[in-house]
Amino acid sequence: MKSPPKAYENIPFLNSDACRPVRLQLEYLHPEVTMEEQGIKSTIVIFGSARIPSPETAEACTNSTLAELLPFYEEARKLSKIVSTTCQTNHECEYVVITGGGPGIMEAGNRGAADAQCKSIALNITLPYEQDPNPYVTPELNFEFRYFHMRKMHFLSRAKALVVFPGGFGTFDELFEALTLIQTGKIQKMPVLLFGTEHWKRLIDWDYLAECGLISLGDLDLLMFCDTAEDAWKTITDYYA
Image (cartoon, rainbow, N blue to C red; front, side, top):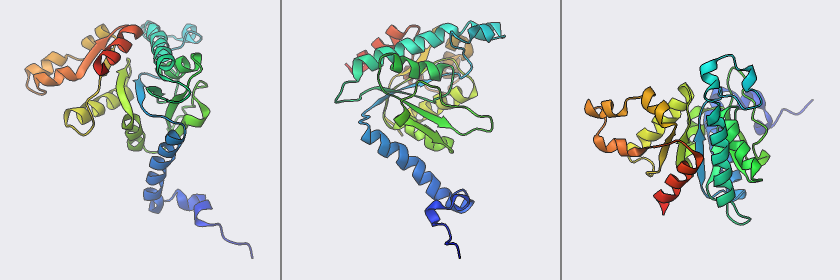
């Protein structure tokens, strides 16, 4: 008689509802242990749209307004290279760039670190439509998540700053959850940079929220605006000076 599979090798069992607590624990432990082994001390989070094209794919973009956002790809790539070159040494991995691992702005973030021959992290997510990891992620720091909330926790657990480029629902979700956690004191205060001043101020009337009393005037101080990679990096370094 063939021996039954061991519990930890029984994939249908591990994918069952009964094993959800086990899967949650594994999604916490695997990235946490790996990042410790790789010497990751702190991170800079880059959020932004998967749809903003790279220079190589811009000609195929049929949405002219979306194509106008191409400079954000280059700025994300440049910022990542500046951060990675400045902060990563053979002994310490501070301010390691971390993205969602997909295309667009996420790709640009990982690509800038690769340009500098430095490490970068990707926290990908299993979706009904496949989002393959971009080719610039450090292979040992490429993670795939089933649960959004575990993924978000790892985005923020080592974060020293969030740099938020234009994006859609996913970017908004990540931005506002982070702002809520900072506002309520659940995580440490850190720079939250909205990259593209005109874009973000046209998109959301932050002052109106405060005028209505829906947020306090002090909450506006949680947000910073920038328009170049150099400005973004200066804002972060000035904050921690």
